[in-house]
Amino acid sequence: MSFSDCCFQGFSWQGTPTGRIGKLSNNDVYIAGDDTDTAILFIADLFGWTFPNVRLLADHFAREIGATVFVPDFFGGEVLDFDLISKEKFDQLDLPGFIGRNGREQREPEIFECARALKRQHGYKRVGAVGYCYGGWASFRLGAKEHAADPLVDCISIGHPSLMTKKDIDEIAVPVQVLAPEIDAAYPPELKSYTFETLQKLKIQFDYQHFPGVVHACFIRGDENHPGERAAMIRGKNAAVTWFRQFLKET
Image (tube, rainbow, N blue to C red):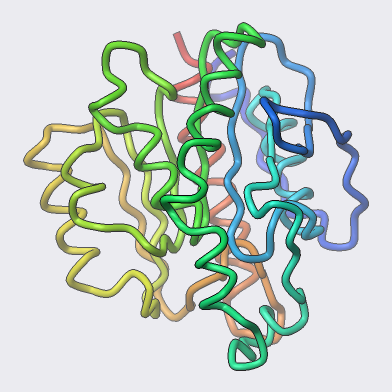
């Protein structure tokens, strides 16, 4: 499949997800697509695996990349209020408690197990990881050098990451795409600069894209009431499609 074959689509804002529910390792999972060679592990943000835009985005990735996309539940069945998240009414959510139950230490082992299952149990030849917000740190950990002898993923793409550390960046060992909103307290300018400078020093193939005027969560929320956010979501989706086609489909 050549790069020129890629026909980008907009976004099915009012669409109905077309995937199916299954299991990946021990986790419930939304599955889009039926490619037998290429898989993408989609690690959602606080909206979680049931949020309609998350599933519609997985559907787009499956169609446009030519992959099977897996969106596991990494929050133990817990679902936060979509409306409160979308309107950024975080004071009405128990975020400390939620993160305490679903933090890095608690969820990293099962995230690793889901990635291992794609190659070992399901036989996918190439696997990518895409992560937004919460999924940003997780995607970096999946691509860490500690897995170099038996890689969990072949490349990653992240958007508006949270909970990510400099150590995560230091240890990356696979090609990386970073989609970075201009206004993002969870991914501040210092960490953005550190990402860009460190990836060059590591001689990692990477794509860093800046999205002016938009805020954290734009790539999932796509709220038409936030100027430029829907366009940013579409641009971000298209960028990830290009990235994964290049590193997972091109030969």
